[in-house]
Image (cartoon, rainbow, N blue to C red):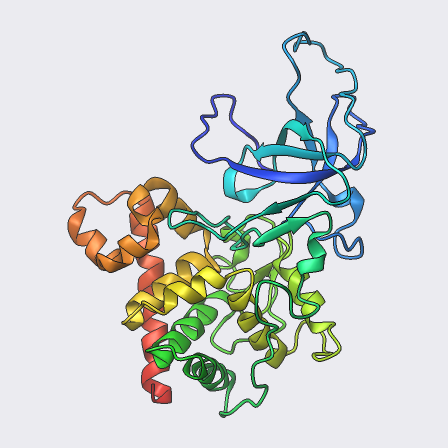
Length: 358
């Protein structure tokens, strides 16, 4: 849990819609437990109700606001609520602003992120449709948003880097992408920096010690070749995906994780798939994968500090980070950290491309 500074200024907040799952606040502050649509799975074996966050509730001005104990708010279990995360992309400090009258047919239509949409730090993004059961649009099978992740399962190559490269290159090649080799290498280069050169599918959050997810995401838990985050729901999506009858493996299966990458590109991260169609260089593809599919903390900080990078297609068409550095002689901490991370990832991507034939 992050501590919010009392001088907090709201430049880094995210809104959400959720469902109240508990109202008996042990601190007697009027807080409620909330399950956020698109972030917390309904599967209680993955995220128990007791693990859902307590959310403070904004009260009307008729409440004094200074008492040590707050009266119950009147919000009932099952209520749909609207709020914001005070800690921005970390999404651990929810504040409820109000409730939404709803019934069993409650839903919100969502057409996908606009060009200036900033993905949460976890790398997850809202589904294209929310309804009363977000898991109806989950990886158990083909949903209304698109693909099922049924890419070819034949792995070709001597090691995991080569196998991942060939798998993804074939995937993008079959779908008519202009530079499938660049895109495949971009993913593998990013995976190397997430889980290690061997791409261990059972990689946990302690990978690389200093550089691993314990520094990127605090104490949150991330797993697999892409370091899918548990708190953000992506690890839960992976576990549901591998439980499908047509997959039938555990989450630490290398082939299943590659298939899950394609599922995300066809569903929750379809905008990344679209943007990659425009990337003409290995540098551009690597940066798109880094900034929007993996989205490490350095990417979030960079996009938060520099509005130009939030309009991604315009930013990429102008030359990406390399052109950005030429245009900005004064480089703060966010730019320096982001550009260093990019150089490491694109270096690995180029090595993969050169080694396995492009």
